[in-house]
Image (cartoon, rainbow, N blue to C red; front, side):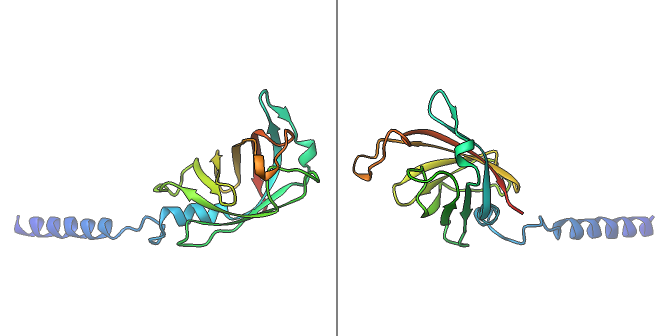
Length: 162
């Protein structure tokens, strides 16, 4: 009987040591940095909608890409665009961005960022390693010379380039 208790005790201790030592797989990388690293890259627009009711502007944005960088530990990075229509667009050629609020889930499908130059809030939804949707509302810019052509609600459905 003592031998059975001894072996059972060893088995229980072995189980406890192996389960306590399990790694979650993130190697201690904060959730915000995991999301930021996934967000960085080049994204191509597959659908673009503007206004209310939504007008399909996908054809105008053929070839439009957004390239984002992320700086670990800084909660943000840069974004630049290429392609799409010439003239007025809802994006500057190059800008900075930062996360809004705390990101605690590395697998989040929605979060908010701010475009630094004008404090524009952008909602990132349907976020994954392969796709995302960007939605934002451009108000009348006044001194930033926005016109009716870009003032309104924008939605960009994006796929990540390999």
